[in-house]
Length: 566
Ligand SMILES: NC(=O)C1=CN([C@@H]2O[C@H](COP(=O)(O)OP(=O)(O)OC[C@H]3O[C@@H](n4cnc5c(N)ncnc54)[C@H](OP(=O)(O)O)[C@@H]3O)[C@@H](O)[C@H]2O)C=CC1
Ligand code: HEM
Image (cartoon, rainbow, N blue to C red; front, side):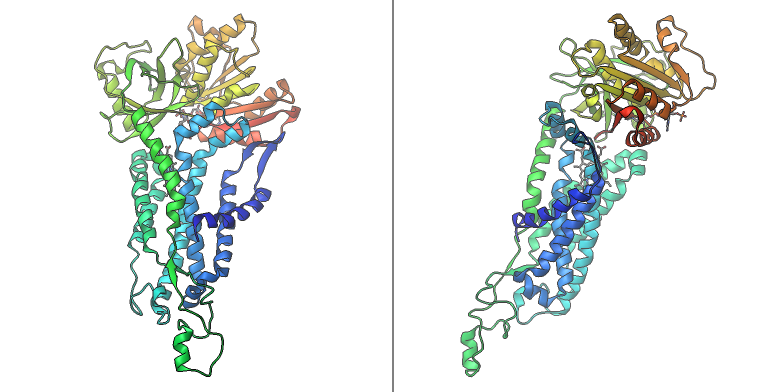
């Protein structure tokens, strides 16, 4: 049964799903969709549908008779679902393609574009489905192997896998696939990725070996189907004996004889049909990214900021990016294969090709990079920019890649909530508004930034003051509403510098009272849809997500957009 013929099985099983999956709609636009529940339901229905079809398939009945048909059908059905997932799992990781789709607005509806934010969630859901259905597939195959081995068929030798009754059948490629999947799955856990990213990264790249073995795995052609159903219908009285031969032996028996022996053929490797497209697409994408990231950037400035933050300003030929996007940084002097994503805090413009990132020194990779960028003698210098005409390490960037923060400009009202260094996506947004705020749909921006220490606000104090001043100058004081929260009140000073006096009045102690903040924004923007963007500790995004999904007063709708390196 070819993959194309498999689609009629999968498609009908997808239809009931749309009635059961929770899709949050507003004005007929999809504003929130539960990706995980959709993926779960698709897989379950597709799996059950495939089982029912295989059980009824007449061209496999001899095989079914020979072995326990349930084991065969489960292994075939789980293989069909694995084919589907092994083709889907790569698509969300075609990041440049997703960035292109997001940027060119080929997808006009924002609700549909917001699905792109779920790309990593979708990828993980497919990855987990691959692991689960691999367990089902292997278990069913173990049952089949026992059956193939014990119920050896003398009538239909072509159907046997074993060369003789009782032979133990090899499954080397299957064992290797399970081993690789186990390593990938275990190293993809959140705690491994947060504590030791390179373990995740190196293990995850085993996916290349996974696909090579998967394509070989199919060559075996273990399972066969009958090709001459009419000439030798299943269930005929004399197994595999043509009527001509039988007439010599037993003239008087005139029951209906088959006209020829049963012929069998191995299934065509459907996986090749399912996987070849997405695999080629992903390889083209990686090759494009490899060529694009081939030239190192030119480092223009390295600045040391308070609270272990370094600002890097760079230039690179033909580099273009939009506010909210991120790049993946690689420094061979630190680690050849290790790449880390950083959101752009300064985008290149027509007049100025410089772009920049702010990185917080929190792990060994950033620690080593800081030592290479800032010689020890100067690391503890003040905020003032340190222009160093020294030999910097070679830095390579892959990207830019899209992120939810690009949608900030596509709402009438947006609320940007940053926790600590999570301010980076919004710094670029503020910079773009400072350059020219008139070209966007956005008419009001609430900016909430929570930091542990007061010094953190110095990272972008000049930018926030400049933007605040600009809107007052252009008689739009209601456009930009910054609120800065210092969560740790011990030894709190204030921002004494005169140039930051506007911030002093907007400085608050402790964590924000989110419910109060939402009520305040709801009251000021009745009947409107507010885009809520969050980047920072998980605690903040969980709280905001819950508030966005709970009913609000004043008829205001809050649409949650969680920032992540999708
Ligand atoms: N594009 C992206 O996806 C980016 C993501 N990030 C992420 O942003 C995070 C920022 O890290 P870091 O700078 O260390 O942040 P911190 O751990 O320093 O926390 C920043 C502030 O958030 C406050 N906070 C934490 N939880 C809550 C909550 N539930 N409600 C209100 N306030 C809360 C803390 O208050 P308290 O002191 O009371 O704990 C603290 O003042 C990182 O997890 C990083 O991965 C960073 C950059 C870009
Ligand atoms: C056969 C199964 C899988 C394949 C083929 C696969 C493949 C990939 C690929 C190609 C990437 C992108 C690398 C890049 O271009 O940057 C990736 C990233 C990722 N995968 Fe998988 N994956 C699989 C299973 C899983 C599973 C089971 C999980 C989680 C439980 C997972 C979690 C992730 C995460 C979180 C990323 C993003 C890393 C980042 O952007 O920081 N994957 N995977």
